[in-house]
Image (cartoon, rainbow, N blue to C red):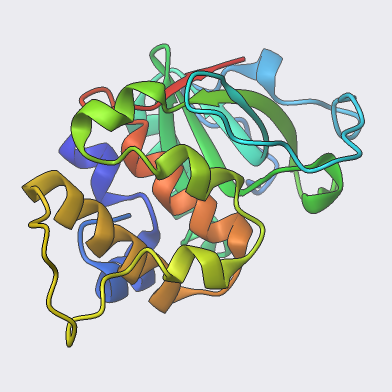
Length: 209
């Protein structure tokens, strides 16, 4: 999985956020799953009119800006490398399929897509209920958050003395929050960075379609 993780945010993002966290020239890339790539505009999705409420034991409906789906990570990497505009996109594996996403929003309207540029919305459900056991029980809350200030509040004040010691995984989560919010103020990108990291096979987020 190191190869997947290594290309999550591209060369520029990797330089900024460490371990945290790719519209072709008209040719079909090897390994592409064509049924996931529309030929006439965005795939229809249900309208979402209100912000979802995150509950620890429920899946959160999200909307990803998708650029392709592939059967191998090598094909996804090649596709991403051929388009500089996807340098900061993430490759997310779900059920042995490698998806290239560049944003993740709470509502359909959060994600702008273009048939000409080969992007469309992908509806997904993310369940982070098992993350509590991994020391990142607030991840579901963060994924559903609409205020970046509230996310930043999860970052401990280094000057303040904490009475409770954080576990290694809690500290790792805090580092991811710190890096993501330092990298960008765009909630769709922050959500993508965290989701792509914690949706890896050895992590706690379960993604379904």
